[in-house]
Structure formats: C-alpha cells, structure tokens
Length: 363
Image 1 (cartoon, rainbow, N blue to C red):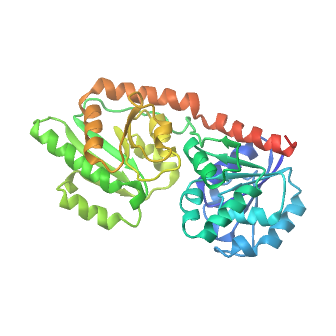
Image 2: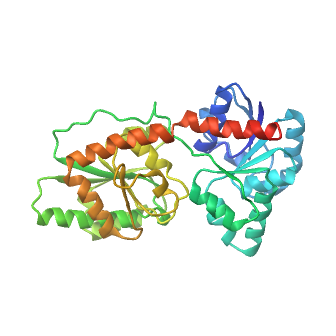
Image 3: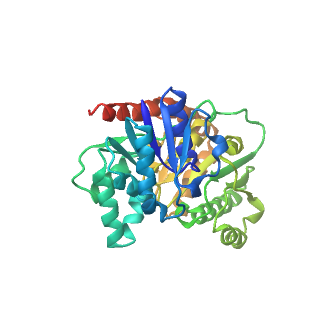
C-alpha cells in the first residue's frame, strides 16, 4: 500500500506511525511543513520525506498547490492526515480521496472554541474526511459533539512498545518511595495540584511518624517551571522535590523506572499515553478524571481515578499505595498485563493499517 501521511515530522507520534508502516513494507511518504523538520534523525530510512515550501501557520493555506503536486507525483492509495486543524485544512484543500483524518486532542478540544470561524474550519475539515480516527472514546464523543453528522468514528489507540517500556529491577530494601510524573510544566497538566497533594501526604506521614521517606520527581520542562518551583518552596516541600527538566523521548523509560508511583492530575487530556507508558513499566498510577485518562486505568486494579482539582483526594489515593506494599506490587503487575492486552503498539498499528487498507479499496 502506498500511503501519504500528512503530519508534523517533528512529532514523535508522527514518526512512530511513519516508521511502523514503512517497516511493515508499505511505501510511506511523510509530508510535512519545513518548520516541523527537527528530529528527522529518528525517522526510518525507509520513510520517504517531503517538505512543503511555506513554513509557519500560513503554510496550511499557502502550500495547497505544492501539496497537490506531491500527491500527483506519488499517486498514493490513501492519504492519512494527523491533526484536524492545521494539516486537516491542507488535506481538505487538496480534495484528495480516499482520505482518513486522525484527530489528536487540542485540535478538537481547544481550536474550535477560539472563535466561530475556528469552529467552522474544524467542522469543514472533519466533514471532508472519508473516515475519522480518534485515539480515545471520549475524544470521539467530542468529535460527534462538533459534528453530529458523523456517525462512524474509529478508535485507534496510540499504543506502547512494551519492548522499550518495561519494568526494571528495583531495590526493594530502601524505605524511600518516589512519587513522580513526566509532563510538560503547563497549567493543563495540573502539576500544581500534584504539589499540593504531595504536601498533604507529607503532613499526614509526619503526623503518623512514618518511617517512609517520600520523594517527588518531576520530569519535564515548560512555561510554569519557575512558578511551580516557587510553589514547592511555599508548601515547604522543595527539599523533597527533584526537578529533572525536559528530556528526549528515548530517556523516558529510564526515569519511569526510578519512580514507584506515577501520578497525573491533569485538568485536560485527550488520551493517556504517559499513563500507559508508566503502567507498562510496572507502576501503579493515580490519575484525575480528565478526558481520556480514566479510559486507560482500571480503577482500583491498575491504579486510582480521582476528581480533578482535588489534592486531598489524590493525596489519600497515593497514601493508600504508599502504605500498602502488596497493593503497590499488585497494581504494577496488573498494569503491565493491562497494557499488553489492550495497548500493544503493534496491535494498534494493525488497527489503523486495516482502516487505511479498507479505505484504499473503497470499503
């Protein structure tokens, strides 16, 4: 199958899809704006890379002629655009069919609500596709809310490579428990809620005269870094916090395997890829009830789901895991089983592969 993948070549998610299809023997053409050219060293040599001439946001409109020319040259069996706003607009202008559109998150959660014009653009882009794909059920419902006319939406989870994300040896003799997260330091990800939850736990543990030493590891960079570090000082937990900063994607497993309990208290999430990565590494998880996060957690089995904006409820859930070694180990083990059964990357690639094959045949 000859596939035209219209997506940001700088995104690790785009790279993983492109590499997966190319490795399966498909002729994969990744077409991207030049402003999305970084991290190309991660792209397989089997992927054929094309850059459109106009960078920045205007490129989604001004690259139409150049994009059509590329499509005429490669003559793909099917086109798959990722992200309904920018690349979805360019895909619509091409008029190419068969065309599968994959929505990602902020393209359907945030972009349509910037103005009535933005909502009209998204609706047009969604309706122009022959098939819509979503990584989560909750995001599929958001698409239906924007476009009630769309009845069929395929669920294509963004799975985990369990050969990379897997449990590592842990020193069980230490009395230090590390609570951690791997997230961008931005308001939507609720790192401030995590800090308040950790302060709540620390106070409770001190009152209990617990022998457990608690550590909070925050992996990631972002616009809130200074603000959050100041908050940790205000909450008197700065000495317990380790700020790793932004890391490349290939180092994520290394840091996950330094964590004992993974926590994500986001205010908004389209899908819980980071949660699945943590579960695949054998970590019990505590997540907020935001967006697609509850979909990837078996509540009470692989972790706990708590109300967003509730540091006390999150703190209580984390403490249950901290204080119960058997529960911690059980949730970690069940998390690995859960990921392998439902979110294995190769199985998820097969799902999208079948959708693209069906569309290329007019099914």
